[in-house]
Amino acid sequence: MQLVYWKVWGKTLEKVRAETHRILSNSSTTTSQGSRTTSRTPTLDQLGVDLTLAAKSEKLDNVVGRSSELERVEQILSRRTKNNPVLVGEPGVGKTAIVEAMAQKISNGDCPDTLQGKRLVTLDMGALVAGTKYRGEFEERLKKVIEEIKVAGNCVLFIDEIHTIVGAGAPEGAVDASNILKPSLARGEIQCIGATKLDDYRKYVERDPALERRLQPVRVGKT
Image 1 (cartoon, rainbow, N blue to C red):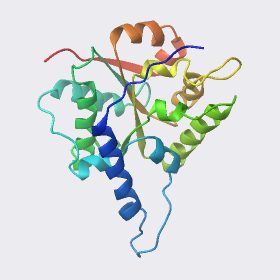
Image 2: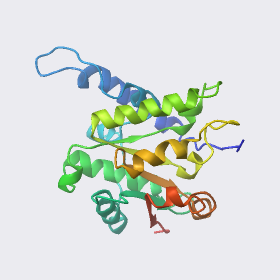
Image 3: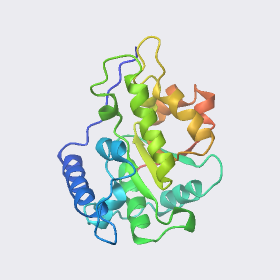
């Protein structure tokens, strides 16, 4: 079984997640008539952070520059096929900041019509794997997230260190995350933005032609 090291965002991520969950529970579950309703993506809400909601709450820092990368991400997301951009660059060059800037643009309505009203939500692969002890448990959890996204119809995932989906959650005899995600990516049922290093993209993504066909790399260099 592949050993996977998960990137931890630290206290900032935890603060954003806590604030996002607070807002979701206090406001987004209330209809215009004042009655309560449940979220259409409860599992995803537990495992990730709604970056567009965080942007609306002014919990994200403003990003200066990177207009060319943002434009490229918008173009790819607006395609009908191969519409899953992957930001490829070394640690610290600002890949996550670009995604947060994209969330701010969506939140402000400063985006193409195809992205209006979308939710840009992180999928924390570490949280997805955590606590899964038995064969099929991880697969069931991820499939539940995918089904929620399909029903909601307005979610774009952000998967940091996207190369780690290859082999993730796959003890002997089980299906890994990439093989669970690929059919839905191929059918356009889910859409994602990824981020990874160039070496890891080549080592894991390029060696899986079925996965690579669904992704479009966007190089991110130092500013």
